[in-house]
Each structure stands twice: as C-alpha cells, then as structure tokens.
Amino acid sequence: MDYFSRQKNTNIRLTLPVVCFVWQIAMIILFGVFIRYDEESDTHWVETKAHDNITSDIENDFYFRYPSFQDVHVMIFVGFGFLMTFLKRYSFGAVGFNFLIASFGLQWALLMQGWFHSLDPQTGKIFIGVESLINADFCVAGCLIAYGAVLGKVSPVQLLVMTLFGVTLFAVEEYIILNLLHARDAGGSMVIHTFGGYYGLAISRVLYRPNLHQSKRMQGSVYHSDTFAMIGTLFLWMFWPSFNSAITDHGDGQHRAVINTYLCLASTVLTTVAISSLSQKTGKLDMVHIQNSTLAGGVALGTAAEFMISPYGALIVGFFCGIISTMGYIFISPFLEKTLKIQDTCGIHNLHAMPGVIGGIVGAITAAAASESVYGKQGLINTFDFTGDFKDRTVLTQGGYQAAGMCVSIVFGVVGGAIVGSILKLPIWGDPADENCFDDEVYWEVREPESIPPILEYNNHMIHKQQDLSESNFSVEHCES
Image (tube, rainbow, N blue to C red; front, side, top):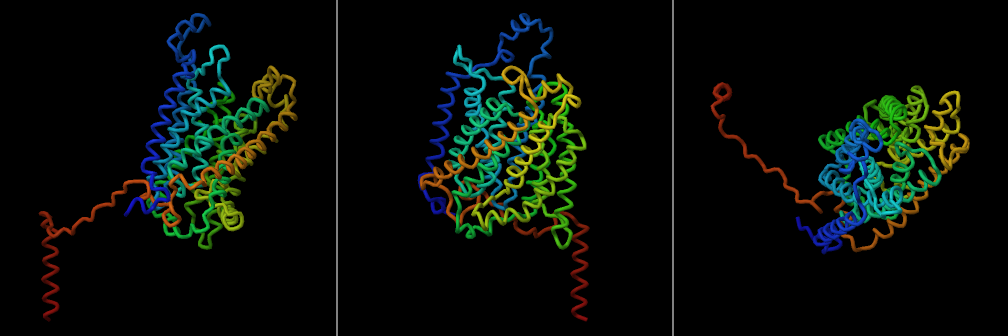
C-alpha cells in the first residue's frame, strides 16, 4: 500500500525524526543546565548520613519509594499501552505510540514539575530523586489518558505536540491544586484523571471528523485484540493500589491507601459484571465493560485513598463506580458522539473523566466530614498537612478547597484541550485521512503473516498415513459398489 497516499502531509516521513532528534538534543541541554541528583541519590549521601545521624542506608527514600515506582512504571508502559490494543488493526500504534509519548513526556515533566515544585532559588538547580520519577510518570499518565480519546485518528507528531502542551498544563494545574489550594490528591483523581480525561475529550471535540464512518470497518475489535487489551486491564488493576499510595506519607497513610484502593477495585468488578450482563438481552458480558469499567473504582478513590473513608466506604465507592462507568459506555458514549460530536475512541469519559469527578466529590465530602474523634488530633494534622501557612485551616474549609481543586482540573482540561486541539487542527501534522484511521499501516511497517503452503506429505506419521489410505480404499470400493 502506498505510504504517501495515506497522508495529508507528504513530509511526515522527515517531520517525525526531526522532531525527535531536536527534542532530545534540547532535553540534553536543559538537563545539563538544570537537573542534578538530590542529596539521597548523590555521592555525598555518606556525609548527609553522618551529619543527620542516620545509621543505615535503609532510611534512604529509595527503599520506601522504588517498589511503588516499579508498579507505576509498569502501569504507564504496559498497562496503558496494552489497554488500547483492542482495535483490530491498531496494536502497533497503541503500544508503540504509548511508548513514544511516555518517553517524550517524562523528560519534560521532570523539568516542568521541577521548576514549579523543587527549584532551588540559591543554585537555580532542580534536584531529582525517586519520588521525582514517580511524579513524572503521574504527569505522563494524564497525557496517555488524553491519547485514548484520539486513538487511531492522529499522527505521531500530533501526539508529541499534544504531550508537550499537556505536560505543561498539568504542571501548572498541579501546582495550583496541590500548592496554592493545598488540596490533597494522592492518587490523582482530580490532577491526573479529571484533567487528562477532559483534556482528551476537548481535543477530540475540536478534531471532530464528520466522515469518520469511512473507517468504520477498522473501529471494531477481534477476539485476540480484546485478549491483549485485557492484559493491560489486569496490570492496571493489580498495580492500582501502588498508584494511589506511591507518594503518600510513609506509614499509616500509605498503608490505608493500599487497603482502600484494593477493596474499592474488587467491589467495582462485581457491579461492572452485573450491569454488563443486565444490559444484554442474552445476559452475556461485553468485553468493553470488563476491560474498562472494572478500573473506575481505582480512579474514583485516588483523592480519598489516604483518608479515613473506612473499608466499607471503599466498597461503597467501588459499588457505585462500577454501575456509573458501565452505564456510561452503554448510554453516555453514544450521546457524546451523536449530540456533542465527541468521538471518544477508548471511552475515557467513562473510565477517567467521570470517575475522576466522582473522586473529587468523594474527597471533598470525606475531608469536610473529618473529625478529631476519628483521626485524632495529630492524625488530622498529618493527613491533611495542616502545618505552616495552613495550620489554622478547618476541615470544612479543606472540603471547600478540595471541591475547588476539582473545578480547576476541569477548567484546565477543557480550555487547555480546546486551545491545543485548535493547534493540532492545522493541516501541517500529517494526520491520517478519514478513510485510513485506526490502521497501523499508515505509520508502521506492517508485515503480514506469510501464507503457509498445504502439507502434501505426512512426514513419517505412518499411523495417520495408513488410516487415510484405508479410508481412501474404503471410499473407492463404496463408490464401485
């Protein structure tokens, strides 16, 4: 198939490598100017230990954070990548472009988050450690969520541009929500999922393709593509407790976040299966629901994961998330496409945007209802970080700021996505034509499996050969008779 006949911009063959090379050179220069190891990853750690009377290397933050970092990293590269392989002819694009976006974005995220959160005013340097790597992965997650809305409809160069602006917007809204409003959002229901969901939906709306039906033959899944997508689901489902607890305080906060997320996810699976079965006249399950809605509980509990929501409270959140997310795929997704002209390939509205809003609401209510009798005086201070400039904040005020944080994430997602979508709509990015969407062959070298000639001999399997000869003789005698 002619490569260039599938492109609006015949220069795309040169555009992608140029962008990648120029960007990586820019990253090398910027990292050389700004990025340094923090005290726990620098060779001066020996001196730091002596100065702070630290007796063992086990106190290094690496040993607390790296297991969670591993899990989050697997979610980013394997979980998100394979979750999007459900399309019958877009597996290379799902996994490969996910790989590209994440590798591109995490470098920019370390810089952007560093400038906002950890820039040393005296040296002008950004000091990074293992927690910085986790936060960079979180930042990239927002862009990968947005990718789900435009999966199969954009070029790799458009994805890089979308990630460049997405990481920048993420760093700003994260700073406003976590630092200025002082909202708590350990698992990123607001900062990651709500922002990423509405960012992707807004971009998809601006890039609306009225003639996308020309690629309708490619939009479905096949048996093996859905199986591969389920691999992504299982990785995400298993590691989501790490995602929600990765940057919480050592000790009880992290422990509680894992327990709450674990229970919430389990509850979500049961209600997803129930609603999926009830939605079909035959009572059969829809793999779309099982791949996606089973994860909605992890999204919704991100904000309140470290709060005293209680184990049964986590089950309640999961119970309703499974119902709402599955109903979203059945009713809301068709409405969004037909009425609002939002072509959401992966249904990120039902898995990320809507559960993210639910998570923000649950976080605001749980924070406002917190009491000293439940948390303890010091526990209340530690959980909501009521120290420094925020030492006089009440739980009711905290609940209000939690709600405000959710609003900020929606505004940044919708407005930012609309602006970035307008940039991506320019006819210079080499996006595929309407009839060629959801097809790997546009941007990938696809090698079809070779046809295997029929075997004319039995390769010494004499038993089968004798059986076949006997059957043949019987057939001839039968015909003669």
